[in-house]
Length: 121
Image (cartoon, rainbow, N blue to C red):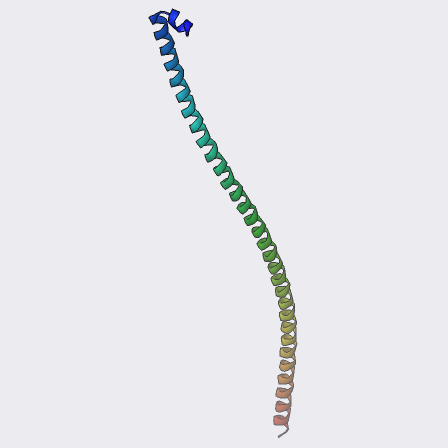
């Protein structure tokens, strides 16, 4: 206290003004710290959302990969079935051609017999 009494009014006023500036600076520092805290909380929340989005994306990729594998399997099976259907159709076509040839031969033979019988009259 003796120190305060021995100081002049100007020095006391200067000390008071310096203390006011320190108070204002501390208040601003406190506001900056509060804003930094809010920013950190928002960043933490955003990081959590990004983490959830990344997990959802990874799950979507896995589902897409699984669907692609199933589609590949289905396409392979469809190609195999088409190959078998083609082979069956080719066999059917060959038999139909043979049947047609046999029918032509039978028709020719029947016509020939008819003409021979007609000529004998």
